[in-house]
Image (cartoon, rainbow, N blue to C red):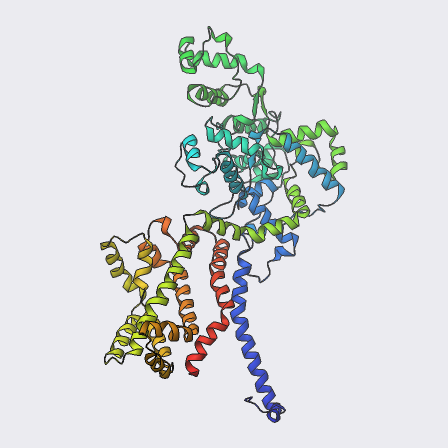
Length: 625
């Protein structure tokens, strides 16, 4: 029978009341669903848009919003590095916008293809692997590197540790080698790990690699060390009209203008990495004279320090490759800094090689401008089109990029769970064991209190329920000490035994058992059935709904436990999913944490979705009886 009769529904006031009820209920539903949708949306974001708090992230339908996510991913969230490559001055990742060009025009496409072809021709030591990630954010590079090593060593981490002289717990803890490109004297060492890293890097897809730029370092040197961030002073000294230090480029050879030559020489002697420096053969006499003075004409001492066998200083030539350490490296550094003829030095950095490439291919800057739709005044003003190239890549790979950003956080969380310890196995064993023990111990205790009219039954119930008055954290300390005394720490028993009996479950079950018809038990006694038989044949079949409720409560309690699980099982091999996810949240960025929360909520959500009828029966049947 309906609460509001048909006649009453026709009344305007009643209709307004009903409408108000629906509005209030709908608003309540929105307040519950909206935060959940925000959590889902945040779980598929990155550092570029995690603070936008949109139910539908913009990058799913707007290519301009996809671009900063790609830039953040490729340059490891380093806004300074992004500005160096793009010649921009964005304050933060969220401010990054694509260049104002049509990336699908023929001129832009030709320019990008030419740039990609040039980058592919560069030596491997001119290129750095991108997508290296930061903090605990997902990283394409780390995933690819670990997969390479996993195949290389057949999944045996011990073989890798033996060759690399490391102590990795698993391939997931393997760290990629750190290449110190900013150090002018750095060269890759000859260790097995570095050799295999270079082999791996050379096999990466072209879009993984980004060429190392020197012009930003030269501009920063002038801005910070020479002109104190005053572009006017530089223009006055150089006789130029630059608007920003980013417009200044490192010339391949020493300029003829005195002030420009002085600044160029200072940077080359003190800062330019030796890898991007070419010394002409005309510097050989100066190098011999430098060594002769340094070793006071003692060729034997030089041979001892350099591990060579020269008979005289006149046999010495320029090093075929950069010295890696010791006296040869120190001597070479001092020679470059103090004695090398500056006219014999040539800067062969990426930017100058690219300008030379364009000069060789097109012959004139006018031809370059016609081909690429650019407006360069000279080859010296040419900048590598990294900014445009990245925008072109985003526009031509929108589908794959969106799929990657939608799934990467979840893939990272799932891989973290599956590849760390035995999280899934421990969680399954723990949950099943808790459900089974709760469905054995609690019903038997409640059955005894219900079937036998004990005078102290309610005192026992009161004692059991009194345990609920204290926070669970209070009971953890005595439980821990007791388990430690019995040497049960870091075992499944430590997780299961302390919670086998539950006061609330016993109280709930006793009330349900009390409502069962007494005539059934009397008939069982007449037929000669034992208490165990009646419990099995009468009580259990009629109590399935309340058993389901107890099982669900046991599952949610066991699945969500992490403080107690971490306390009594401090061995990572015994940690459950919740403990591992908690560990992940300590270091992971917010968007990975949101993905972890979503993954953690899925099992419980699915259980409650598919067990709604059972839950309702467990609530309604006891009250109905």
